[in-house]
Length: 448
Image (cartoon, rainbow, N blue to C red; front, side):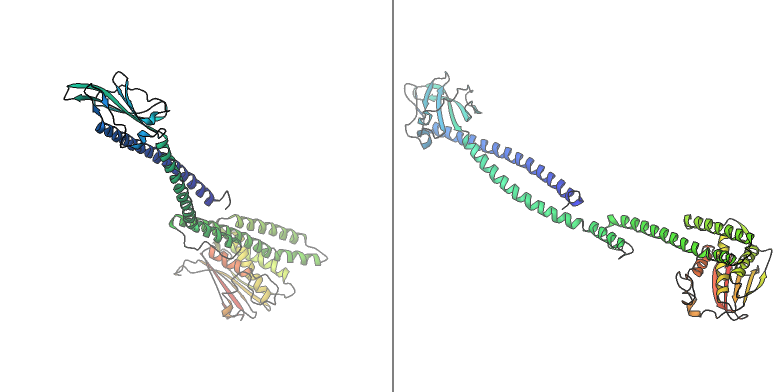
């Protein structure tokens, strides 16, 4: 597991919290057990004092007498750790157990009659002092005595140490089990994140196109935003790729004209300048289109007839060997809402294809649609040729990038795709059919 991994951080933080909890719980339980052991010892010492009460007798002379043999055998064993001393109120020792031999004396503590005091002396022993007033009914004698019973602290310490060792053993075992459970839970909880990482890796490798897995509700928004980002980046990349393809395709005609000029002895200077200017316009137009965010904005009305005539003039130079006859049916006063560069692309590609496929004749029509038309289209551009035409089943295919009607004919297969995309952006319509007049292909472009 990597140190900078999220699972490692979560496991480490959970482990630290668990360790802190166990340390605190160990201290609390140990402290509680010690208090309980001391309280138990106090009750035990109190029982020892009661046992001394039961065997003690006051003589006629007023002295307190304790039998030599007691029920608790530890009082008779030196070094047993259980000590007992009886004193009068004036601190004078009346009786002491044999177990006090060789032991440090139990300090005297003044206690009110009938009261008990449980303390720890300077010798680290637990001592219970109990003060009583002893009366002899026969002789009407009484005396004040303090019974003191002590137990070595080792008695409690050994219990606490045993309890501590047992508790630590169990805490350590339980802690390991909990950490293992926590590790399993973390691994299970982080499966969706690992799935997203795996899916992103698959996207980078080209095996998937988007994050399409089933993710928890907390990650659905993240997956949606990542998919939007991926789609946006792909759209930008595709737009730039298409723009470069469109640029290279648009420059073909001016370059062909310039090549034709170079083959002539008398190079027409104005023609070269016109084509260079046209190439600059094409480059500027394509760069603006690449920088666009996807929406098409119209700059205003343009004279379509003038642009179409410029395109025909250029194509006459490109296809001068075919001696193409262009028949024009154009409304010279027609103004349409369109970018000049867009119209160059639409009409230029359609006319270039017609020049490439025709035998001799091309007919160009640019007319206004009647006001009575129920559609939103106001202008129709028709380009017909007398070539072989295109099969009806191939019409939809050639509108895709990279698809050509005849693979034997030189080209890149992007001209008609450009036309289709631009017409769609202009909210127009592109249709293709067989020309009844010339017998070849007939393209219709409806524009608003």
